[in-house]
Image (cartoon, rainbow, N blue to C red; front, side, top):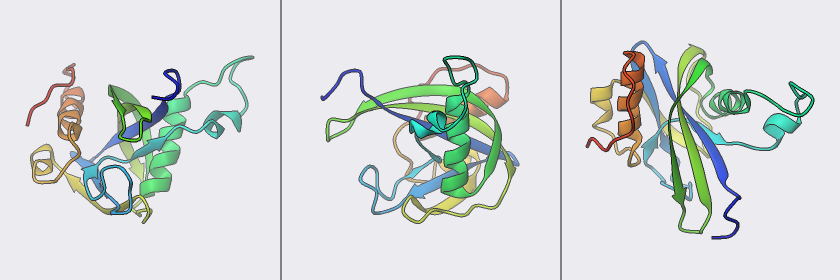
Length: 162
């Protein structure tokens, strides 16, 4: 592993619309998890904050929320709001690159799903039960369960369920 302090930071959105969740199938050209279903999101880039004025003398605030809003709009063409934390996970990929993924829930605001071809090739709005029928990346279904609990006001921690 290269630098133990250098992580790729990724943020994802479990988007809720009409009691359903948006899942997308990763493009077959993706290096990681091609043709598997997941939720939209993407990497934090330094320009997500350095291109903006600081909120205080030294800091930028709401960086992850703004990044997620940008990524969702770029990746699936939707506007979202009320981004809230669900869980986090870490992985060291086959190439040795460590990733920290922050999974959130967000409300759909507007837009129709328009996919970025190099990112995803299909999208579906699904219920929790319907999600079981998709080839989801391991752990995603469990995150959807957490999101469902969150919507019901029930706090939960990630646990493998299927």
